[in-house]
Image (cartoon, rainbow, N blue to C red; front, side, top):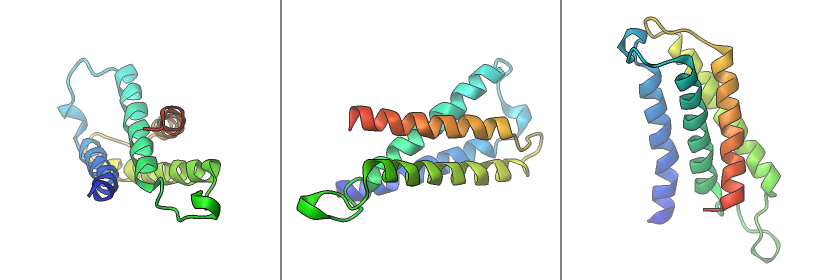
Length: 126
């Protein structure tokens, strides 16, 4: 049951990001500065990479003496790449929302958040 929950959490978080990116530009509070938006991008993708790492940890197969077939750096790479690909599709989706546009700086913040989240997960191993 725990594995199912760990699998569904990143999918639910991706849905949450999708909903947020579908909000038209005029619907945001007046105090939503670019600094808060940058923090939001970093936070959303850091959580996504943490949840994804948590979901795939231990599901990558068993190698010699129960060790994962993927080393930690490979698993981090694939999870970060997955988060980046989702960030690209999210920016594409955002381009069709009224008042919103595709931003490469937002994608850069998403990438930074994904890397930060993977590092955080590896440090704390929750």
